[in-house]
Length: 257
Ligand code: MG
Image (cartoon, rainbow, N blue to C red):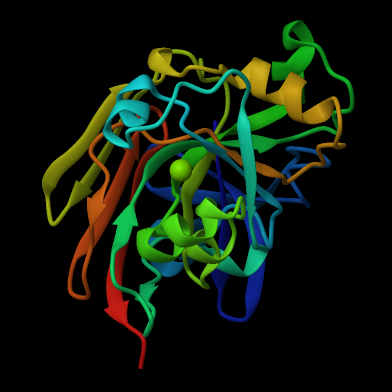
């Protein structure tokens, strides 16, 4: 099942995407129930939004060996968790704004996990019961700022700019997060390609690890880390992230006015 959040006229709602390209409206939030209504809309009549509104976003650093190598880092012994502010989240088609102080802004293709049920001290074995589904994420990062702040042990500003967390286009349920093809493209050129079976710390392990300290809430997002091939983007580019079973998240890059 593919769950979307969308705007039509002045209304925002959740719906289920069918294969024919129409949306069936849900009675409420997918975090409460997946009860459908009789209302349908053609897909081209609506604007798709980020599939969750103002989520808490947990990022995982260095979670693919190939990216650990290209970053010249050491393989982490435990998940490296950081956060991105909810104001960084944008939806499909919305612009990634290249900030005025930006010097080296990179794309990072990632599988994003959307939490469906509260999770505290959840074991690996139970972890996936707390997941609603998966979507595409782009952990956009300003490397010059990121490198400077990481020297002193901080990690927020370089990854926290407004628009630096595109998510979407839908939340796909019933996928195996340990076996999904993930790719990142810039202007149609493939820059990143991996299968999520290569994750150092699996989705169940990440949920067990985070929930040992922090209650995960419905709508929380975990960006599970990026593989090798990160690289610069510039105003005028179009960045696409594709996750098997989910679809393509596409965002143009524009200069800050
Ligand atoms: Mg990342």
